[in-house]
Amino acid sequence: MPDPTEPFEKLPVLVVEDEYLVALYLEDALDDLGYRCCGVAGTAEEALSMAESERPAIALVDIGLRGGGDGIALASGLRDRFGVAVIFLSGSSDPETRRRAEVAQPRGFLSKPCMDDELAAALRSALAALPSV
Figure (cartoon, one colour):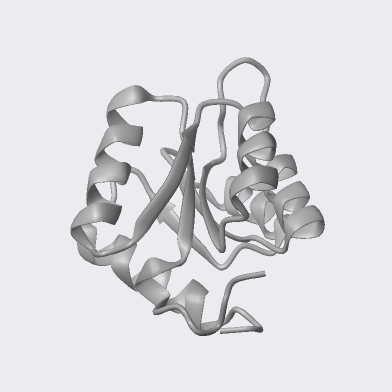
């Protein structure tokens, strides 16, 4: 669980994105917005390992991970095992994808590419909803 005495911006954020340039952008955007990126994972397996060691408060999760990984199943695992709030990222914002994603109870949904202000708003909203913050 996040430390309630830490400023919101210092709480760890995990990036789960298999596209290098998008992951790099998100890492830089988090830094620019004053958030702390605790890691970047390209697969569901890497993300679960990082979540166990880093205990992020929030994860930015790409719905469509390469190599057969499913961001929606990963998001449910992050929430259930580690209490991580998830904001989904997707290049596809069709209604079917959003409907499928709701099963994981995300705290936000961003269409790629997203702008810094959209990312900032989604992070603020997700952090405000954390029970111990």
